[in-house]
Image (cartoon, rainbow, N blue to C red; front, top):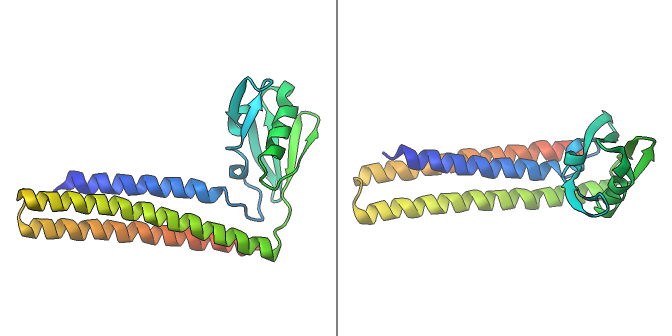
Length: 187
């Protein structure tokens, strides 16, 4: 048995899950969450630096439908507001002294369906990445078979273990999708 190969596969698939989870967090639900805006790139300090919003400010969901952005440096508040507008994420920020408030409008049924479709595309991309990891692992097993580095029984067991991990991770992806769809359908 080759535990290093199994661990390597599990680590790679967990990374895919992490990326997918972060990607799904950017799909807007009717509820305010900092993940909606934290990775927006802002041209700060007269365009001298390009930083993400989370590097420039504290982002909080103060209410279910409201995000507050508090810049660390108050002099760039207008640049942050402009950057959020230019990101084209469908959110309109308003400045209130030293704080930017972003009201999250409720989603229409049509918009919910569009977001569910987008979410399903992201989930399918995640599943494709997982299958690629599995494919690479199976290639490694095939190489071991041609090199006669292991017995046939060990190779079959390794293939079963690879498929078992793939099935587990794919199930987690499906569960993430169901959970996100429930969030999207909440009014």
